[in-house]
Amino acid sequence: MLTLNRPDKLNAADLPMQRALVDCWERIHRDDEARAVVLAATGRAFCAGGDLGLVRALEAGNEEIQEELSSIHRQLLSAMLETDLPVIAAVRGAAVGFGAELLALCDIVLMAEGAYLADPHVKYGLRPSPACQLMWPHLTSVAVAKELLMSGRRIEAG
Image 1 (cartoon, helix red, strand yellow):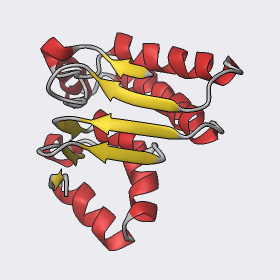
Image 2 (cartoon, helix red, strand yellow):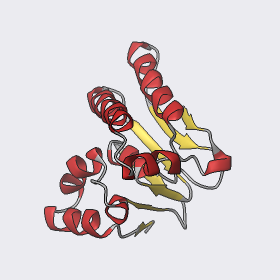
Image 3 (cartoon, rainbow, N blue to C red):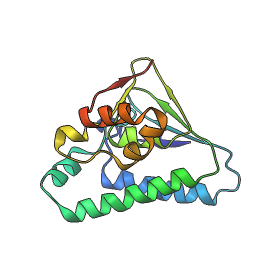
């Protein structure tokens, strides 16, 4: 089980958490005993998105942070898509931005009543999450994916 564990910040993904996720996926790929990956979180939210400090740094045009985040996203995207193991997400509460991106890369997503996902990057003047851009058109239609990414609209658990 891979558990996001920053419940006091609604599991908002700061750089240490994102780096740790890359490291966890590297270990998962080396684990010959693993049969599946369950991605979950502690607390009342799956992931409230990127830590506000990171969002502010991106809004301010911090290129160093942008480059590191781009590298992390490429590594996570590759690691999650290249695994032969089924990846199952257990979602409670919000899965926003980075959280929605992680879900887009999972094979199965189980959402509790009241859970939702959204990619609100547009509201901050930022590009959508790379995995949402890549995967949502395959999971819905291109038109629906564009509407969700251009509006930041929430998708409620059904």
